[in-house]
Amino acid sequence: MGKQQFHELIDRLPESETVAAARYLEFLFTHEEAPVDPEMLQRIDAARKQRGPGIPHEEILREFGA
Image 1 (cartoon, helix red, strand yellow):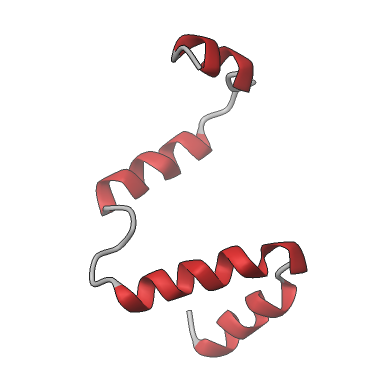
Image 2: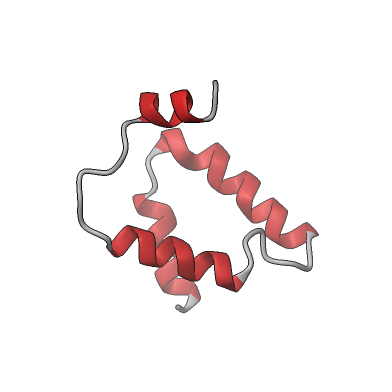
């Protein structure tokens, strides 16, 4: 992805997400490591590709006692 594409993504970013995006960019500039390791990124991508209804948030909270 080139800088031009990156600028286009920023232009499409909703105002409500600008603070989170700026914090993430600050993180990338101040840390040498990625916030998520490549293996975890692969697991996240695999999970996103799965089809199904998902698990309701309330069920997750019950499972973990929150």
